[in-house]
Amino acid sequence: MQTGSKEIKGEFSLRHFALTQQKKFEGHVISDGIAIGKLLFLKEKKPQAFPQVKIKISEVESEIARYRKALKSSRLDLEEIQIGLAQNGSIEAVTIIDSHIRMLEDPFITTYVEDKIRKMMLNTEVVFQTAIAEYEKQFSKLQDSFFKQRLIDVQDLSERIMKHLYFNHQNDLKKLTEETIVFAKEFCPSYVAEAPTQFVTGLIASSGSPTAHAGLIARAKGIPFLIHIEMDAILAFEGKIAIIDSKKELLIIDPDEETLKAYHTIKERENRLQEALAQAAPKGSKTKDGIEIKVLANLDSIHDLIKLKDFYADGVGLFRSEFMFFEENEDNFLEETQFKLYSKLMEESIGFSLVFRVFDFGGDKKFLFNQQEEINPALGLRSVRFLLRHKEIFKTQLKALFKACKGKSLQLLLPFIADVEEIIECRQLIEQVFSEYKMTHPMDLKTGAMIEMPSAVILCGAILEYVDFLSVGTNDLIQYTLASDRQNASMKDIFKSTHPSIVIMLKMIVEAAEAKNKPVCICGEMASNPLFIELLIGLGFKALSCSMRYIPHVKTILSKIDSNQAKKLADQALKMTTATEIHRLITDQFLQLQYQETS
Image (cartoon, rainbow, N blue to C red; front, side, top):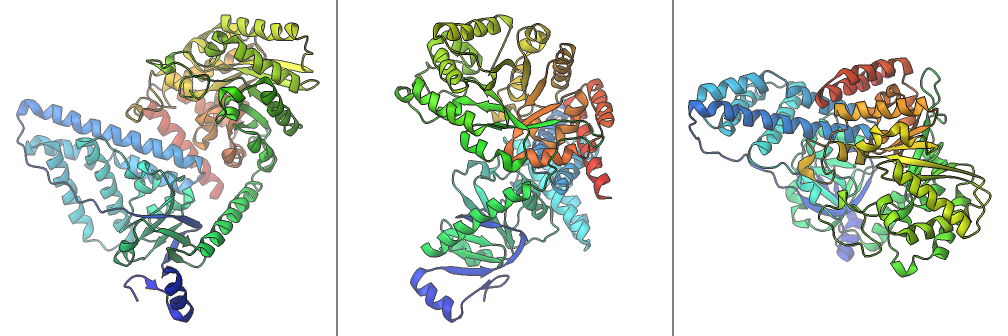
């Protein structure tokens, strides 16, 4: 028997253990599910001791500026976490992180610490640690569970601020590359919130409670979480394969092959059940006041298309054709190969509208045709630029596609359009393929442009003279508008979906499309995130194309939105001048919307 956790033995277990070395420990589950992965011990970090450094009067304001910068960076961290949690549809998790953001505005964190820097005339790290120690001393005397949780939240937030004061904040869990069950004495809320779910499959802690914020966030993210497991009992097994069984409240370490296989089967069955639960979301796509909104899917493969019916999507708003050939080499990249794949695609998409994006090579997708290294690939030969430079590649794709679409309708999307001339050249090439190969036009061919850079936004009205529809790629639009690499972690304080310029540009695009009476759809992360849905509806978007797994969440949010209220929200956002203001506005409205439904 272990303190805080019980090792299960018994007659069968002892005999089984002798043969397999399999060990089982009982705990208490605070987040359901099956987790399988290697055990990783998260070592408790002791607060770093900083030497006291006297500062001059002339240095006081620069120290305060450094502190304010750390607060701002912490806020950006939390806003990013909050957006990610909103995608999982959890109001509780969003509310928890919102409370952390509001704590950054507390006079104790702001004016009190700044005044203390002025009075103590010491470096910011020492002053801040002193202030937090005072706070902890005051709250540690209180036995109420509310104040205990408040203390955990303050410690979590103070650790984040300190990391920004003396080094760049980076969650160790982000370095994982394989499925892992992480165990620690205790997890702070933001650590769980930042855990990458593709690698962090489960959590184990020696302390915690079902109502603790870390547990609530784990449930929101679907990460199984087992508590009351003594660390000393399992520390020697770090690196071993383990299983969390939430139904039996068990941790199984070093399972035999038969047990491991059985749990993989159970996990696959649970995943299928989750897909079935998605069907419980509203089947239609309407706002609360009856406005029809199309909820479409962004897809990369034919396999995903087969599952589309299960999510009640209204069609495919973006099919990324280049990903069909991710593992192909150039020798296999023949017209016949493409024709067979596109024929299968058209067959599986019967009954759905499908927007087919032509190859978007280049930039961060350099996996074909031995593309040359570029100093700045994001600003180089990519997408339509690449295709117009390599016309034979473009013509081969079009020929294979048109053959597969014979007698069917087709919506063809041209990515990364900068101006009208590129569209004209693409359309000429399309007509050249029809005439050169004596091909029959698809029954209904529509051509669209993807709006992903500021030049296209400014020229939207002119572009609409040459296309039938628009798709907005928000990920690249943000990157190119704010000149911030979306794959560069150090740019996250610049790369903001809530930047006022982005909101204004989205409104410009909608107004241009409405003036020409042509449809416009928004793709990218914004369309997948419930936090942004009401803003997008208020701006005038009538079609959202999102990651398939988020379709049920998006439909549920839509059913709660009043379009008139959404318009008022968008009007407010359009008058704001900072990303922080807009983030606060849409977060408050999102939470209010949820509480109205539950009250």
